Amino acid sequence: MQYAFPPQAPAAVPIAGSDALFPVHRIYCVGRNYVEHAKEMGGTGREAPFFFMKPADAILPVAQGATGEMPYPPMTNDLHHEIELVVAIGKGGVNIAAADAFQHVWGYAVGLDMTRRDLQGEAKKAGRPWSTGKGFDFSAPIGPLHPVAETGEIAQGAIRLNVNGTPRQQSDVQKLIWNVAETIEHLSKYFTLQPGDLIFTGTPEGVAAVKKGDLLEGSIAGLGELRVRIV
Image (tube, rainbow, N blue to C red; front, side):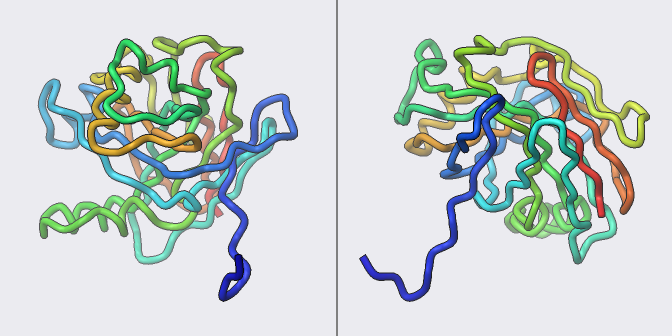
């Protein structure tokens, strides 16, 4: 097959303890999936899950033990951090039952859903898509993927984020409003999930702005730490 110009290499995430890479197909994100974060963003209780997307090449892969560098994006004065459990899909499917969901999980990682909050807020007020607020370059820093064969199903565990050593977000994965299996069930009603899909499962309360020079240190029990500096 001939192309008009050489295609870019696929976006990919490092795999913990391996030289192999996990190719990324799509990035799905769950909005307002912790109760307290839903409240701080103006929501209430257990609302039906909703989803938005980022381009696959929005990822900023960070190797184990390294510190990634994320450029402060243009057109914003209000860049926010959102620490999240990321689920990697290894087996595709549609209309997947929650009881079968973990058959489709390849592994887990620590991720950040970085957000141009001012642009997102303007889009909300105007009833417009969130793409400029959520889907910009390098808006999805992510640490190495850990195979589910090694971690087991992750249904609980501390999730936290420090900025310059100061705690900002602290919760537990078990406080997800829609857990991983339920999220896969709902998402697969709308999309045919494919191997290589990533699901950012939502962030706890405590989201706030960061500036150039800030060091973000996120962690989830059993998945290690993700370190990113804003440059």
